Image 1 (tube, helix red, strand yellow):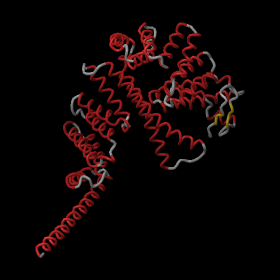
Image 2 (cartoon, one colour; image 1 turned 30 degrees about the vertical axis):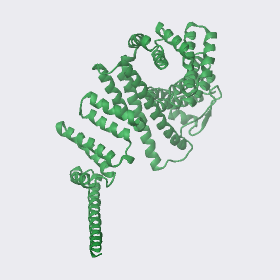
Image 3 (cartoon, helix red, strand yellow; image 1 turned 90 degrees about the horizontal axis):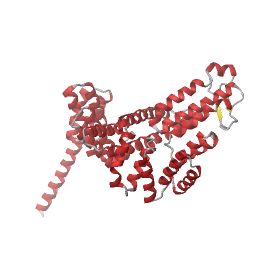
Image 4 (cartoon, helix red, strand yellow; image 1 turned 135 degrees about the vertical axis):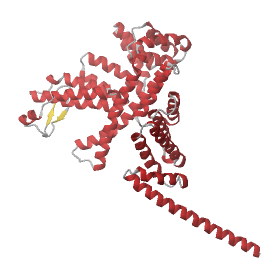
Length: 458
């Protein structure tokens, strides 16, 4: 009994000693973390680094802030340094990303974190082109959803093109990746635009934005601009690889092997259509094969296009109705867009706008619709309004509409912004507004446009 009591007492004392030791370590970690945070907040990285090293060694799971500040520290140091020293800091940054996910997986977006590692490898030339690409590919395959950086998305695609030029990547795979990348850029751009639009609508309703909302608005605008730049860069990187000269032999070569693969046939026909390669006999061959395999909205749409090219209106309408009945969602949006285009070219602007609007309801990222509507507004300016001021006011509406194109589809940002600027240049100037006494008033356009335009306050 005495032995048992002695043993129990030893265990209790040992336990108390262990708890005391842990408490001391915990207190020490808190102190070190506080010192690290204070130095990091003022970007005194020289003072912060020893505390960072101690935290990573003794209490790596003490706080997520270790790795958030660590990221800022190593990014700055790598940027400020040069040569081997810069690369060394970049490797520290990569290790920081790895530690963050190791100790705080629930608070670390997996795909974004791996993409950050890949981007660092690319920026500081760590590893081969294939090594960098594989890291991006890992991020994309394991957690595409959390990747939000337009720069990372572009770099991933650029590396694929570089590998193709080195003979390490197939042209077909480049096209498939291009589709995925542009879908992702458009998806993120659409989400950002929706958030921005809510704030814009709040302002237009006369409600002042809070300081936080003001910062968010600026961030959304900056990010949307970046998405536009990098989306354009993706198109530029693809360049001549996607022209008819490359597409036609590629798809001719693969036709026999893939002629029963509906997805392959559909993608080939779609890409030839987007690059205006429809005059080549291969396009007709692809379309007819697709319709024979499985009549669908896509195959009917392509046949509609062939009928339109041959001038057979009855045939065109037949396949349009067939395609419309078979389509849903984005497919239906694409089909309605084709119809909107032909309606616009026929001069039926009101009907065309209705069709473009239906497209946007189904596919909010189809920014080209906004550019088309804006162009119709601009072309109708002289026919809307009774005074010169009212007619020119139409250009404000055209400009606002054009700008939305770039927000929902970053690939169009450059063109959309330039178009909007051109329209604004044709709208009434400040002196015109003053002379007409129209500041803050509204103009009702009674033509097919049927919209009310708010005149800017002076």
